[in-house]
Picture (cartoon, rainbow over the protein chains, first blue to last red):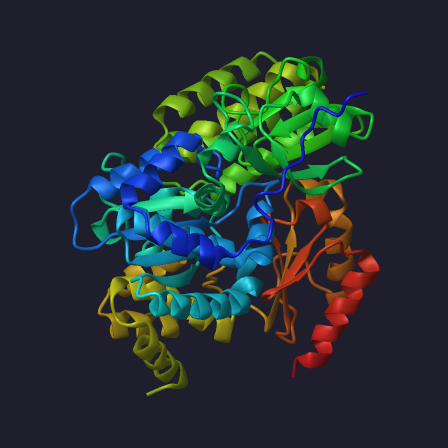
Length: 385
Length: 156
């Protein structure tokens, strides 16, 4: 059988990051941004906003100070690729930040690292000092700093992250204004995922064409996947985007895969009967890289219960639909399981999760309905009995 | 000036006294003391010219900024989905048994707190636990006992 999964090596490939930067510094900001737009690169944290456009918006703002932030607050259950990228190729992340700085006109860069990865700090500080020195030697005004999180999932949301950096509770802000207009300390800010920054650097290295040739029209390039759960091959793999879930399961499944959670706890649960027609990419099911496989020994009630406990704890509590909604969804499925509520109550809960999608302030509350509805629709009987 | 006031002042000298200095200072106190006492929060508020309520309000938002007393070592066992599937309950039961405390409690000698945490980012190597800042992936009950013993020896 032909292997339909294509492995790629752009992220972890060792390159001379300083040579790439030297080449890029000779170009104008517009040239750099146009290349990133042309490549079709979209944010790799999960939301998938076109990176080149984000940079262009930030660049077009007039301000005395701008910031380039690297979002390393990887908290989505099932995702661990940013840790690996930061561990293996920290220089490429720093260089990606400098490239962003050059493109948008920022002279300061911040890495916001989740507290759970604090063991990386000594290494990162050392790399940062070295890198800052190298930038100074090149007369390129760009200084990187590292900031730590303190164990809050919601701080991966870009505006919550900036609130946290400013010394406040990590509560998401209203948008607009977007971070490219008013970000960290009210200044134009481009905030990009760890992996996105490395891809941007590699586009500067190889040109947009090499990247564009990979993937599909809506999902250009490759992506680092975090694969876990019931699989003999758990780990981190860079794969071309646009594969079908069936091909993915054939490669990574244990032969008894009944469902795959695509995109982490806030993503979608796809049941076996839909593997064939499900495409992994922005036109199908987008993912920040998390792929969790479940075999037929797993109870989908327990899985959904785990997710809801997670969201109920991690909701920042600022807006009512998310705060109360998460609690009620959790209590609701427990009540249906115990029989104190009739099975039809699940329909009410699904309406609630639809309301949360519309009424919640940020991506957390808006996406709880993804796992909730996809698990209830596919595995209703497992929730009831 | 008490010991904690001196420490807070020293940290403010390093990180500054602006609002965005607050998180690094809170983190430094937790790093050193394992939790934020009332005294520490009052000292920070005074040093940064903020209301104490504001300092507490910020700190209490974050799971890793504890405002209740914790042991010298904090064990956090990941409880999220894949670690759950791979047997985190057994690890917790083992450590509970070893330290004679329940999850969420601190041992009477003040050396350990045992907590659960949301996804620690090691799903391919679960179950996993974090002791202070050190990570222990693919932990078994035997290994967990070993690790706790090591920390017990190191902690006076």
